[in-house]
Amino acid sequence: MTNASKLEELDKRIFAIKKTNRDADVTGILLEAFDNAVDNEERVHILSSLASEYQTMSRSDDAEQTIRKAITISPQSPELWIKLAEHFHYHDVDLEKALAVTETAVDKAMDEGNFVRQALGVRVRIATEARHYSVVEKTLRTLLDYEPKPGTIDVKLEGDFLNAIPVGKIDEAVMNAYKEALLGGNHV
Image (cartoon, rainbow, N blue to C red; front, side, top):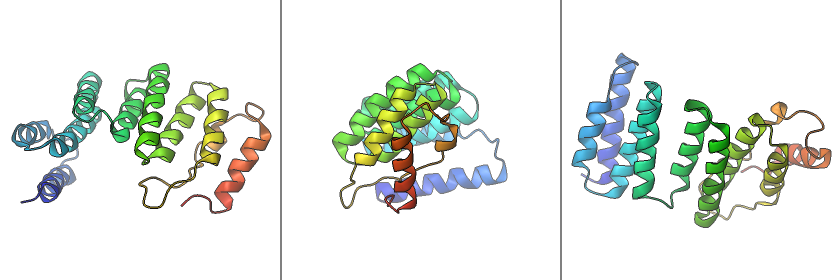
């Protein structure tokens, strides 16, 4: 069985359990799978799932440790750094830590060429909530200037955060250009 099919089977098993009982504790299954993983791709996937499970269970410290363990295995992965930033944003609620981690997430995404828009979108959401509007404006400018290369893995240009940015806190021309980019289809 290939890694992909093993991980797919694990994900299906977890999904089936959660479908029956969304509060079911599947950490034991994930920890056993981690112990039986044969390579780092499997380990990182399982740790990411385990961290999400810990977050669901409000076990914030365990979730953070698990994400950090995954990062030690795959330190160049922008996805893991994004996950850590979102952990601090939504689960451990430390906006300054979250914002600091987005810097690494964006750097890793830019280096890899994947998940750039996702990392930048996360930074905008966190900076907006933390009221760091200069970071918001700088990040929107970066999003406007960013041209994804063919074949990159990323999200579309996002705009869900725009209504949370108070009028007058960033350059109106930047805001209008970003809205125009969203409407103009510059988001594939």
